[in-house]
Length: 195
Image (cartoon, rainbow, N blue to C red; front, side, top):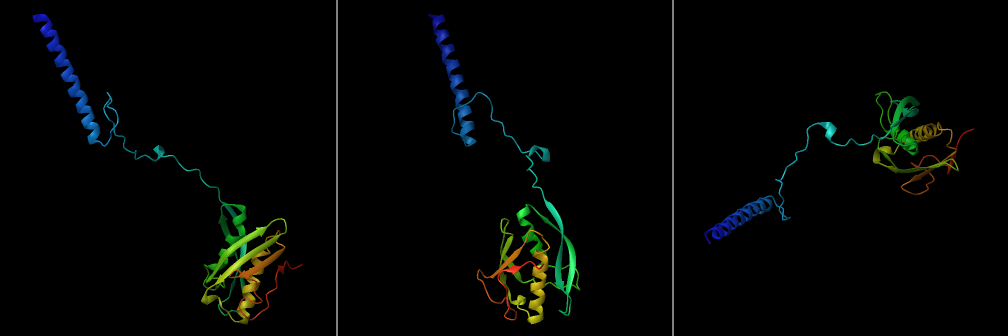
């Protein structure tokens, strides 16, 4: 009987130790915020690596570049000043918007932008018809006199018609077809490519 008592005591001690170890594992998981089943392996915390090679690198978006001519006014608003700039864009459809946006800022103090306070709210090209449609939103500084409006239209036409695929230019102001952009000159609708 003594031997069977020792076997029972041994089994009880092993059972108690097993429960104790298992309970400790559950307590550790509850402390770590996990309510999942206990596992035999200890929890491992993985810290992000400081090396850039560990993070997946995004696929670079190819950029396209093109040299275009853009037009500004001289300081006296007497004549157009032509500048050649390199524009960068992501897809071919963006080339017109990017070229037009280049009209808004001049790096040369002698070349004044006529488009600085203007927003091109929509620029869409219909390849089948060769038609470029623009919608413009004017700020207060875009309101020019008759000579300024003439240079504005010339700069706009010269910029878009340098692209041989553009056959006609439709210009809207605040989403509407207007007779004049600034009230001085008649605005043709559409403006056709000069011969």
